[in-house]
Each structure stands twice: as C-alpha cells, then as structure tokens.
Image (cartoon, rainbow, N blue to C red; front, top):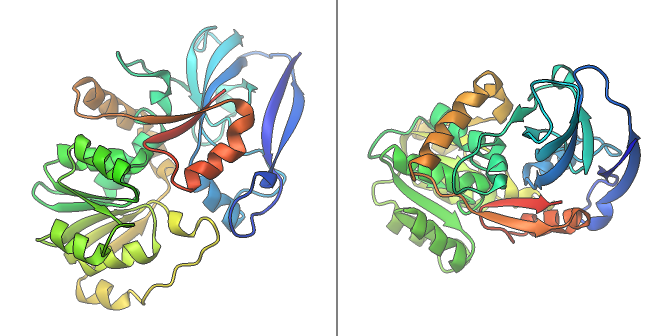
Length: 331
C-alpha cells in the first residue's frame, strides 16, 4: 500500500485567504486494478481561479483541493501509461494517486509532450491548462485581427503573459497591465508594445498614452477598477474575454460604475468562459502552443515554490502577486 498525502479545503475564507483554510490528510491508496496506474506528483499548479471556486462554493468545504498536476507513473496496469511516463492530470495538491483514464471526469490524464530546452513544469504552463486558457480564451472570444489593440490585465501571470505573446503572433498592438517594475520590465522583454504599472501614477493617463487608437480587445483577469478604466478606452464593437476576477478573490468587493452605458453606446461584447468548454479541442491547443515554443515565438517563465508542505502559503503568495509567470509547487 502507498500512503498519499493531500491538502484539503476545510474553511471558507473570511476576507483574505489564510493557511488555516487548508489542512493535511493522509490516506492509503488501493491496490491497482485493470487499467489503473499509480503516479507520484512532481509539480502541481497554483491557480488564482481556485480562490473563486472557494468563494462561490463551487468547491465545497471538506473537499480535496483541486488543480492540475504533473506526475510520474511509478506502477501501471495500463499499457498506454507505462512506468516512467509523465502525465498531466487534475490531481489537486496530492503526493500520490491511483488513476484510471476511463473513470476521469472532464479532462482525462494525458502524457505531456517534451520540448527541448524547457523545464518539466512547462506542462502546467503553455502545454497545460494555462496555455489553453490563453489560447482559446483570446482567439475564440476576442478573435483579434492584425493591427488591433489588445490589452491584458495580470499580464505577468501564467495566462496573461501567454495571451500577450499570442496577440503579438497575430499581429496586434499589445498592452500589458502589471503591478511592479520587475513585472513590467519582463513584459517589455516579451515584446509587449506598452506596459502600464497600475501601482505607479495615473492608470487612466498611462492607458491613454499606451492605447492612442483605443482598445479593440481586452483579456480580463482582474475585474474591478482596472477593468472599468480599460472599458473607457474600448472602441466600437470591442470584445472583452473574462477569464477571472483576481481583484475580488480576497474578499474585497469592487466599487465600479454601472457599465451599461458603455456596453450599449459602444456595442461591446463581453463573454466569460471556463476553458473546459473546449475540452474536445484540448490537444489542438497544446499542439499549437508546442509549435510556437519550438519556434521561439513563446517564452515561458515559472515561479517555483519548494516543498509539498508549502502549498497553502505559496498559494497565498501567488494571490498577493508574488509570482511572475506560472506559479507551481515542486513536490
């Protein structure tokens, strides 16, 4: 028998997320049956969206923490997943798990493709959920055209940094919003045409200077006041892809004006999404992102937090903006 450790969600946050909102649990895993395979986690993902699940009750108190992970197969009764293979699966924050591809809901486990020169954790970034969130969320909802202006909030995060690079590949003028000079500097290195530091000076004035032709597409990871300021700059028939609401994830309700006038007068289209909408096309997205990585058109960066036991405080650090690029825990 293998003893697995997992993090549980045990208390709904009141205000900011706390380490005491999580607790460790141990359990013995069952022996493998036909088509099962046993995995040992190498990395798991830290995603701001988890805070939204907690806030909205979509993740019930008492449940295991959900999320994507990369794990190595250490025992197998499934020929498609031999010992030594590295798989991506929705394991959550766990050390070990028994998987059976046919029993998995939504996203089934899959073997992560390798890309020369890239770390293993690329499978949680461009070649994983973050990559497909950026790929489908931008291209299927915003449908950017060459020469258009695309604004991305939380642009130095796992999803935002990829959105901006994809928009550049599509020939757009790209503006990134971030909260530190270090993050803004990295966005410039990625080729963003302009950056706005929302913690330095007037955001309204910075946005006006960065978007002289207005904004055609906005990829929104934050909501709140930043989104209101971007909406002021939106052009006629502008498109807004709503991926997240980081500004409210720590229990801080946004104080914003009624947006109806802008939506009507500018005939804007806003659409929220969950990436699993495109589950039948999952490998299409990963295939394209892999091609761009191999061509050098995409750059990937990680913030790696060390140790399984660090998960809650690492998650809190990520929510507070402590990461650049993809935030992962190395088990």
